[in-house]
Length: 139
Image 1 (cartoon, helix red, strand yellow):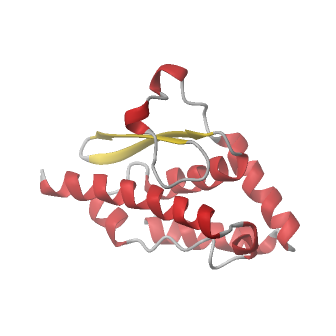
Image 2: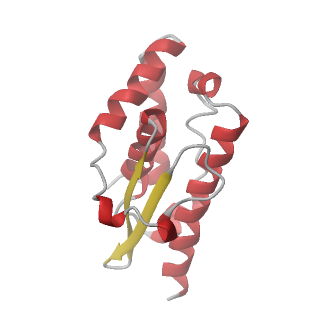
């Protein structure tokens, strides 16, 4: 199994290989299509991520002491970033999740598509995932 950082590095290479910012955004939309829709009964207020411009539902649970992410958003570009985070973090050791610096947006031309509110939302999503991983380590 590859580490979250190795997966992120591969994704950054794939995004860069997509070419110009428009094609990189298309890559993100393709990732969005891979994210399973969250059932409506899971889209509850207690799993809604605050500080996101879009609506983001983030349901975190563990299997064998490792995080599993179920999530959805009403915005395609955010669905794409969530899919990338699922690829990076699902089933990983929680210590590796906590140690990984999530920076695939900043390392690519996707940064041009994310205004400060969207960046703050991404930070909030990553923060919730890392907090959950920390709770798994503490248990």
